[in-house]
Image 1: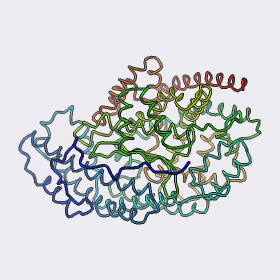
Image 2 (image 1 turned 30 degrees about the horizontal axis):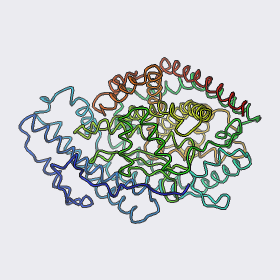
Image 3 (image 1 turned 90 degrees about the vertical axis):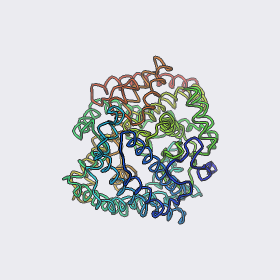
Image 4 (image 1 turned 45 degrees about the vertical axis):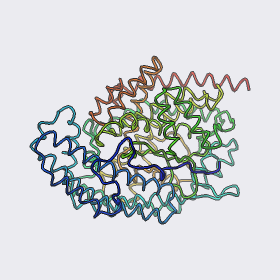
Length: 590
């Protein structure tokens, strides 16, 4: 693939005609705190005489927060698209260091004003329940002395991005990004797969100590943040910070056990099938992505334009409105899809809160999984579209446990239309692989979540102890994969997980949401039209309701216990058997 950016975010005008500014001046300099602060002072000093005044005050505050949120998002996008551009990096760090800390301090002052206002009790209780609950929670755990600590953590996160984005490998006579190297893991030649895996893993080893040092600093700072806020450990603080009102850390530990009991047997059976069909005595880490029938890798597209046009046709078939929304993103250049040197790894969707449009970032290299990544991030984008008419920014995005339902559901539902990229046999092959990866996600989620629970309940652990714990969890959840001779690489596999560094404890959401998405998928198999109506109905609520009600609006249950997990996994297992039969038939005829 030729790495070409179709990113036109810098050309997107703001404010938009759809959502004009009423409070924030059009020509305000958003890099200058002296220009921004008077708006906070206005809000802080404003006299609020009635409940209507208070609601207008909330709208003005929301507009200011939306403008500043989009400014930060645009700078983050620019930085992740060009981690090697020093000017862009400086602009991002300026906002991070000079603007965001002040936003936090003034945001807390406004939270205090809201909570003390005499008109608060007169607001519609159903409408404002979540906002008041979340505001009270944020205000209670806020400490001004934590602001510089959080800024330092954010700077360390940016350093992590830079280290990862700078990793390249010389392979087969060409400089390759780490994402581009993943292509070789589907190569039919086992020797090439091994060489590529060794090259990529070998490139990570020189940075391992640097990343260990960076993470040590992060965990130390986080522990201090928690103590400053009156918590004995970061785990308890982080659960409050994430607004986890509907489940506890104990529920997470029960989920780990449920995964071990219900999912691991299915996962191990998938690995056994892989080992048997490939004719191997043991599975090595370079044997996990190649097709088990030794067919060439699926090659769904060669240019990113083919990727987004194919997904456009898929979304059109799933639901006309979703297709229209994705088309708007393409027209406005709100996609940056290709992998290239200097670009941060991974993929994400970020909301541009002033113009109320989504932006999708990813590293496509022509793999089957790139389709699912764009379908996934497309689901996040649809979430923003469905809730964009909501005037309060606080309600335009939901809790992560439900946000990931939006994205994971779209992967499953849209996979029925992969004929836009594949033949019928290839379609079955792709869907089978996707469901296998879905199964493998649950042990990964349990392992990463358990690792973080251990890390932050042992804030003064040594690197040796951290490695030992990681290996214990890898043995518990990682399946039968042979790393002998590559123990140094095995020890640092966790360093590849961005979430551990940048968004601690944000991983269990994937497990909870996957169970929700499987329920949406199950609904769609009996009545697609109704399932999409329910899905969009849930997304339209944004974050205006507690988690159980958001799930209920989408006609699914908020429950991640063994009781709910077991029948869902049985349905996945049955579908895998059907797809395996189709696949074997196609192979026998070829």
